[in-house]
Image (cartoon, rainbow, N blue to C red; front, side, top):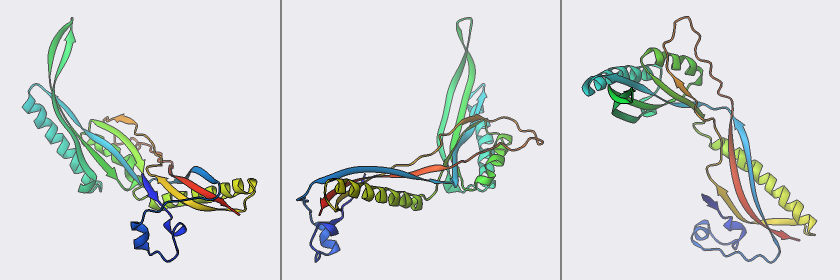
Length: 238
């Protein structure tokens, strides 16, 4: 949670910025106050897509399961890089090796060893996303989970949302003050709650072999809501 205190409105005009930061300002309102919490959003097109992909292999022995997995995963990571994903945007999230069993006639039957290697990847060119997922399937990926769309730098949109919140808060506070017989308001406190925003949840997809004649996977990024929530305290003034 980030807090913004408008010290300039509360302290003497001669106080410097450094003094304002170091000084505890106690607010004493002589008139009634109005407390408001306002939320608002702006819509923006996503410019990145994050997803999880990887390989699961099953073999009679642990060493063979790991060996097969390493070969297939190396191919998948090579494809990620070939399609333009930077090293910094590829992160291993899970490596596992487990025994697998079937149940026949109520008896546990050893099936083999399953090795798994999963990575998170971030694609910054959404135009390539459909063809990108198809290419991964061809190169040996057995699991997809995603995409989750996002905005790489949403600071501009958050500022736009704050502007909408501020305008709404001022208008509402002034209206309430006038109804109470006052002419205006002054800001005593501003407190922003971080982490407001929106996005799409990932949808799991299982990889499958792709025929060369098939069209690429259809992808609809849509729009995301980027928001701001701010709490205010206003003093009503004549």
